[in-house]
Length: 319
Ligand SMILES: Cc1cc2nc3c(=O)[nH]c(=O)nc-3n(C[C@H](O)[C@H](O)[C@H](O)COP(=O)(O)OP(=O)(O)OC[C@H]3O[C@@H](n4cnc5c(N)ncnc54)[C@H](O)[C@@H]3O)c2cc1C
Image (cartoon, rainbow, N blue to C red):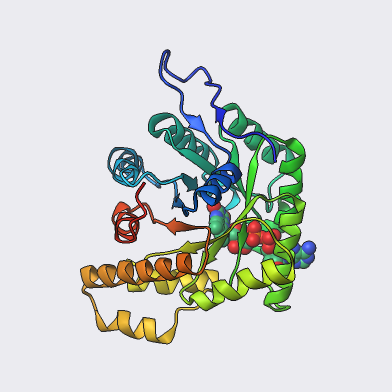
C-alpha cells in the first residue's frame, strides 16, 4: 500500500494564504478505521439541478452534515456525463471549503476514452484523489448508443485504466441482490465484482437494499469464497417518501420487501410519518450491519442532512 495523507496542491482558484485541506485516499481512511476499530461514515450527494439547489447544498445542507464529521463524501455523475463539471466542482468545493475528503463518481459507458482521461486529469489537478469507477446505464435509445463512441463496455476496464494512470484510490459498485441486468445469477455478478477488485479497486460501495441477509450473503461469498480483501461497505438509503422509494427500487432492481411496503402505505399521505419511520428503519438496519461486521456505512442522503444526522447520532457514531 502506498501513500497516506496527501495535501491538495492548490490550483490558482485557491485563495492566497487559505489553509488547504488534508485530502486522504479513501483506502487510507478505511485502513485508519480498521486500526481504530471504528466504522467509516460516508455520505453520497448528487449535483443539484438548479442554481438555487446549489446554494442550498453549500449554505445549508453541507454545514448541517458537517456537524457529524463524515469521513468522506461522494458526488454522483449524471448519465452520459451530464453533470461532469458539476461533479468535480462540488467535490472540489467540499474539500476546500469544508476540509473533508470527496470522492468523484465517473461513468464510462458511451464516453470516448480521451474524455475520460481529461476528467481524471482535471480531478487530479484539483486535488481530487478518489474516484468511484462505474459503467453507468446505457442510453434508453439503442440508436443513440450505437452512435456514441464508447471507450469501455464494463467498469472493470475503467478501473484498469485509472489504476494505470495512477494517483487515485478507486471505488467500485457492488450489488447484494445482483445487478439488475445480470441474467446469469448473483454468483456470476459477484464474481465479476471480484474481477473489478482484482483490476485494482480499493473498496466497494453497495447498491441500496433493505434485507441485511442479502448484504451478509454477498459479503460472505466475496470474502470466504472468492477471497476479497477490500472493504465492502453497505449503501443505505433512509426512506423519505413512499412514491420515491417505489420508483428508485423499480429502476435499480432492489427489492422493497412486501411488509415494509405495507407499513409505508399505511401512513398514506402523511409524509412526516413516512420519513420518521424510514429514518428509524434505516437506523436499525445500520445498527445490525455494523454489529455484523460491516466496515462502515455509505448513506444515500438525497442531499438531506436530517436522516444521516439522526442515524449517526442515534448510533453514537459521531466522533
Ligand atoms: C454506490 C453506487 C453509486 C452509483 N453512482 C452512479 C453515478 O454517479 N452515476 C450513474 O450514472 N450511475 C451510478 N450508479 C449506477 C451504475 O452506474 C449502474 O448500476 C450501472 O448499470 C452498473 O454500473 P457498474 O459500474 O456496476 O457496471 P459493471 O461493473 O460494468 O457491470 C454492469 C453489468 O455488466 C455485467 N458485467 C460486468 N463485467 C462483465 C463481463 N466481463 N462480461 C459480461 N458482463 C459483465 C455485470 O454483471 C452487470 O450486469 C451507482 C451505483 C452504485 C451501487
